[in-house]
Length: 102
Image (cartoon, rainbow, N blue to C red; front, side):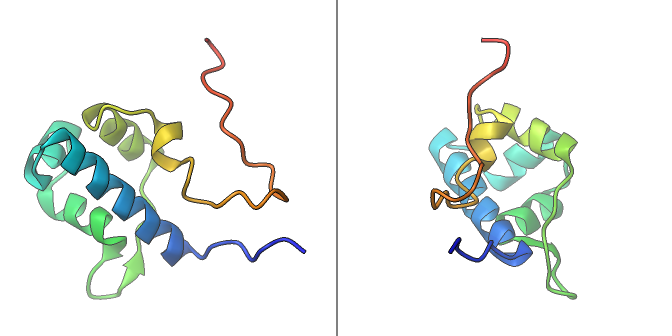
């Protein structure tokens, strides 16, 4: 039986941890990443926290354009940014196959 899929909150928290780890690896501050990606600092801080709204405690669900901008700043690709957010238990069909243009 396949494992239960992660919730939106789980995915948002995993993405936040990924963003924080990549940011730390690049040596950038939250403010530097936010400015370079065209976001305000508070929005980026919320993403790293896995939230879209602190008061409502709703999970982050960034737009694709935001992920593209962040991946460029953090020196990665969108697929690499999100590939491990959903654990592959062997029953899913999620697999990163690299660039179709390679």
